[in-house]
Image 1 (cartoon, rainbow, N blue to C red):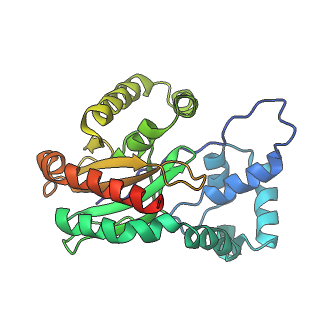
Image 2 (image 1 turned 30 degrees about the horizontal axis):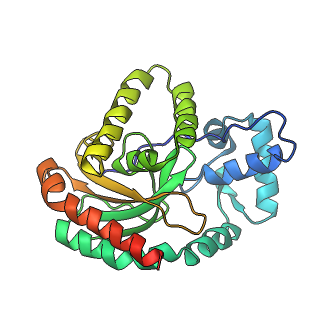
Length: 268
């Protein structure tokens, strides 16, 4: 599959009277979060553009994060890469994410059946992030891995998450997307509404060439419990091999069954 498109990112809006919100901390976390799976090095200018912050502010943040070990400055070019201190944050979360251990064998079963990639993901701001990924032995043009990000609005995974979200959460997110994509919003809104209808009638969200032109996928959301937000199982692959008919006729019933088995195992 082709590499994922860039996903928009923004800090969640907050009431102006929220005295407990630490803006400096939020901006520092935004800097760390703007590094994506395919990035090796980023400069202050690129970080400033992604975080929508002044370059002078970013310079202070990157200097602080470098001193703490969350970033490493590469002398040649003066750009930054994620530091080893970030490993403790991500690895601690993944190790304690029991749903991965429950879901993985069932995901692999579906991947082998469909000759596809099957992924587990959840929302991070305005994109979806992979927390587990299984693939069949069938050849793939490319592979997405844990930590990869994909579109919230154009991918089957993102649409399934939106279908599972509360009305308030969904409306708040869509308002952010609308504000950042005013000219494209009418077409985006129409596709999202159609996806919501698909989910109600089919039990899965679909993306047939919407996220990437030659990629088809379906996805179903579930509640993992333990205070975690909704998560999604996605099954997709190259459109030439994984046709719309194959996904809806053959794969969809198995995906729905597997998600039900995951929920049953988690709630025992």
